Length: 285
Image 1 (tube, one colour):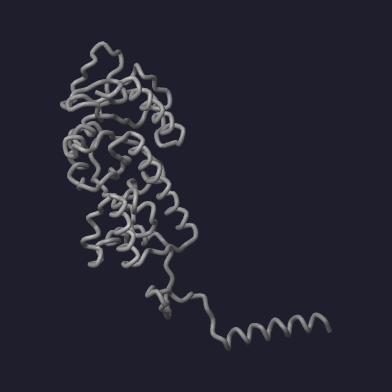
Image 2: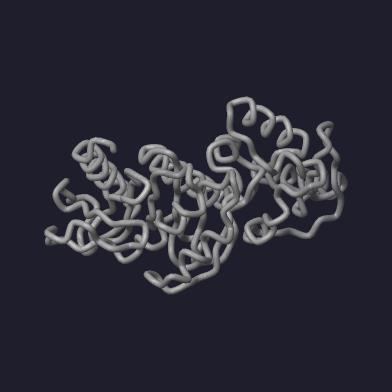
């Protein structure tokens, strides 16, 4: 048994961070910590994560029954999602469900989180699957998420809803939430620039090998040579403005850059310069 008071305090601290960063508004979101084979501490329903106190944290068994019946607070109804994750992945000891705005925008648009772009996201998140929308608090919500969880999955997006991150520690699960929203914010900023570069196949293979040496195996390494990474990126890439392409230039690294459709011929450029020169000289006469 872990020291429950310390765990409860940490849950309140993390709750404040979640609220302060704007990952949950009002009393949204919930998180939990598994403290034994049949006991889980979870946040109560109807309380802002920024204003939690240790005595408000509830205790449930692995079937979702609230054990601390003397507690005036009631456990979150979405703890059923947490419990299904714990049952599917015994190595997971903490679950954080939130609505990080930049990441949730992808869930609202039903656009998968792209991969093969940002090294940190690849190392700490890996592939982030997208579960279909299911009514919150229903058993089917957990089922739709668990169906997508592999041995190396640590984050899942829920269609039109939010995210769920899980780890061996509460801080680890919270860090994944931060990284997820930061990555999605960066992705949305690249749309304003109108261009995004993706890592090459070999760059991804090398990166996954480094990740494996760090003790974080990623099953995508076994299929990377076949082009499995980035196969679901098209919905996001399609949100960039496209231009008619008249030619392309192949770079030394094998990537292809489209020619700027606004480019003009050398003759047309010289004619424009001559016209401007004539106008300037006329003004000096």
